[in-house]
Image (tube, rainbow, N blue to C red; front, top):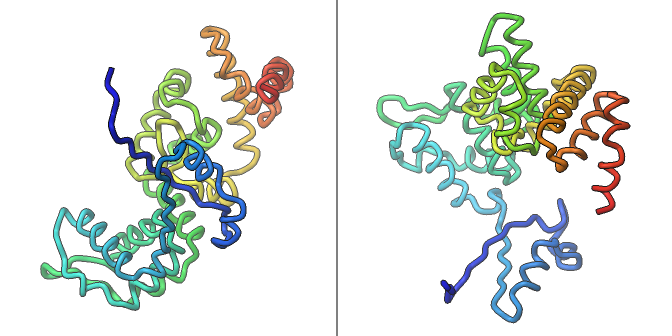
Length: 277
């Protein structure tokens, strides 16, 4: 039997969201407590990472590496990034790598960051774009995807439907979704994935902020309700043929959201049993 001599486990937690370190230390995240308990006398080390805004050199390295990949592996002089630009980008992204990348991609799309005459150029217009809150930037990105992918209204509706299906199927294995939704939606899922908007396994938006922007600023409640009901019906058919009881609580949730009273009643007992173990 193989017995490793050394085992290193690395986990990440946020402590208490938006809390200070002092508060986090008083009520540590469950993951942190679990590592300490699991170490059973071995070494457990907690490392606190500084936000980008407090580490400009780290932010500069991050930008440099990201842009080098975006511009086909070219390496640029890091002095091309003005200190004011690095600081503003760090502050606006609030140290969130996802926001950091979203702003960088937007700056590239707008031509504010570009390669000119073999050198990297950062236009002073970056301040205007960075004045946008992250949520507004995410909304613009989602709406641009909907508008640029097609000019046909029926095709645009399919894109809207695809976003709704991603929302209602969040957390399900893609292999399951692939079986029960129309093939044209699967093709759209892959297009959304190529734009960095969604994950396909498990299904879900690539970041919670994108999901929130979609549900709060773009999606219409009646549309989500209709798609939830359709999803409950599709999963019910799959449940009847497969007997996969693990789906019952999920179907119940969708049935409630979609006002499918018959399915809500059908899966109420299963959902209750799941809630109480």
